[in-house]
Image (cartoon, rainbow, N blue to C red; front, side):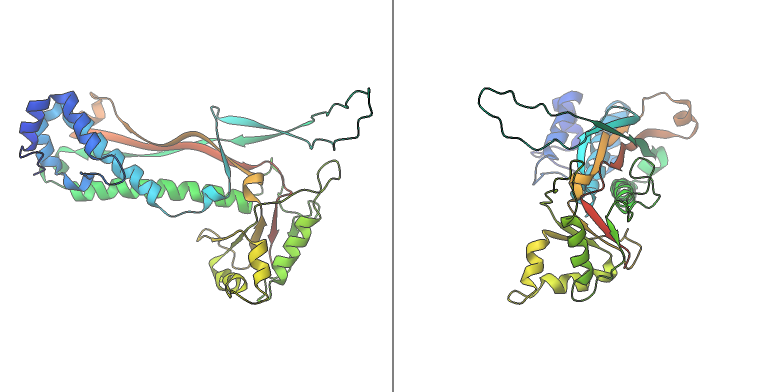
Length: 331
């Protein structure tokens, strides 16, 4: 039984009242070092202590905490590859602009030239994803707290991995739809080559060369500052060998690689990517990860002896807004 200043849950609930009790439980679970965790509770004891009125709300605090903690704790790389922006539509027109012309000398008494902005519209489709978690009377009476919390944590982890796959599929252009419905990595775009990675980094050198030759619409060089190397797990050792030894010629590779990333979602054993990913890819977030409680009185809940239902969901989309900042190899 959870205790707080010598009182059991029922006594604490009676002393504080429903609203203050719920607030106290939430407060004790907050912070970097919470005094209470969802796993400290027994749903059966909680139900017996607070009854049917407060049970759904308090259980929601536990489930939400478990889902979101698992979501945040799941190690992923996707958020390092995109620039995240808020969105409010199912389909969002990404209004980019063609490159601004170079500044020009202005003679005394003469007007400055105006820069013209030419729109290059792309569309990113935002999609909603989610799952329902239902808690039945039997699960509470048999005190299956551990299993229910494990399910909640698994939902949080799955939600994070779902978003991760969405981003990685976009970055890899798996369905050739990341860039406005046309193939993203092509010889015509100058961001694709077939030189193998190589233990000497020859493939990386080719990627760097292609990036260095990129220009904007006005023919001006593009400055690529953040240089991430993303490789499949099969090439991870070769990549680390390039940047590993401290005092050898590989020091050069340390200077041209700001971060080395890999992911199990990279299923092609020979492909690798190099460049400034957040400049090229955008994740549009309509809703971050959410845990919502179903309203009471649903016939489905009555028919199936469900005490409370929760919906775990997220809503967003990913796409490329340019092709000049990341090079792909299929060496």
